[in-house]
Length: 391
Image: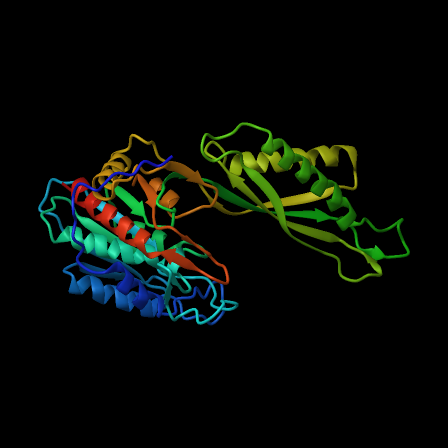
C-alpha cells in the first residue's frame, strides 16, 4: 500500500500547470507521420519556445526535418553541479474519432479532458513549470528541457536532440500514474517472405502455394509465443512476446500465389535484441525447410528499439523518491512498463533516467483525461527533485 504523510515543505510553483496545459491542448500537434497532412509540431514548438524564453531559458530550435521542430531550453547552472534533462514529446495521435472537441480542454470533477492531456501535454506542462520554478533558485548544474517531435511515430526528435545535447540524468514525463518507471520493453520488427511458384489454379504440378507454406510458419510463431510466455521472466517486465502484425499474399483467386509476406513484431526484455530474435525466427523457418524441399524464405530486419532498465540505486531515482516524500508526502512505487519510450534512446546515449508523470487515462482513445491534483503533485515533486539533483 502506498504510504502518504503530510508534506513537510511547501514549494511554490512559478506558474499554474493546469492553465498552461489548457494552452497546450488548444494547439493542434497531430503527428503527420500518423495522419497525412496533419500540422505536426511547428505551432506548439513556437509556443513552448516563447514560454521558455520568457522564463529565462536559452532556447535552441532543432529542425533537421523541415516542419518537425524540437525545442531545447537551457538554464545554465553556476558550475560544478549535475545537469538534468527533462524530455517530453510535443506530438499527439489523431483527433479523428475523439468524443467532443479534442482541442477544447474541458474541466469537470477535478479532471481535464482533451486530446493530448494524458499523452502527454500534462507532462509537458509539468516539466516546463518545474524547470522554470527550479531555475529561479540557485542551481549549480544545468537545467535542460527537451521538447521533442515525432515520438508517436519514429522518435526522430529525441534522436536529433541527443546529437547536440547531453546531461548527467534525465526524467521523461510520460504519464505513469505517479509511479516511477525504471524499465520497459523494447521491440524488433521483421519482414518474412515465403516464396512459392506462380501457376494457373488448375496446375498443382507446376504451382507452389506460398500462402499455404506460410501457414506452417505461422503455426511455428504461435508455438514460439507460448514458449516465450512460459519462459524466463524479467522482475518487472515479465516475458517478451511476438505476433504476426500483417500478412500479404496472392494476386488473384485463380492462380497459385508466388509470394506471402508476413510482418512480425517481437517485444523484447533486457538480454534480448534483434540478433536473438532473428535466431528464433530462423530456427522455425529452417526446421520447416529441412522437412519440405519446396519451402523457401527470405528474412529482412526492420526497426529495432532496445529495452530500457535503470537501477533503483541510480542517483536520479533516489533523488526523485526523496523529493516526492518531502514535498507531497508520498512513497513512490517503482515498476516497469510493457511499451517503449524515448528513455531507451537517452540511456543508449549515456544518460541514465526514469519515467515519472501524472495520473489519468485514455491514451490514443476517444476520451482522454488527467487528474488535476495529480498534475500539481507531479509538478511539485519534479521541482524539488530538480533543485536537489542540480545542486
